Image (cartoon, rainbow, N blue to C red):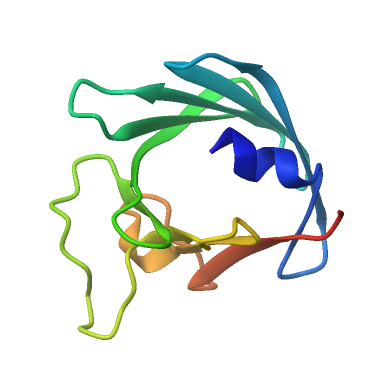
Length: 130
């Protein structure tokens, strides 16, 4: 995850707003990534006993939510805390969150994140810097 965040400090959301990403600390077991711009906060990454990557998100200093990341194939899948791994609500839906295989984009289907639904169904970011 830190290598994705290190590709570029500059990300852009679908509305053209900037997100600045920085790896603040990294060990073999955990890491902290800070966010500023359209989102202000931090992401704390740690390896859970299940060997899934646990992701705790803090916005403005307050805990926002937890997700779990696995890299089953080329892309990384991001699942909400407590999910049962079922993709839905439609058969053609992707996992609730995804990171491209090269780390050039990240997206979330807000309809699949209980408590975090938004009027726009898809929220995503693309790396804009080199």
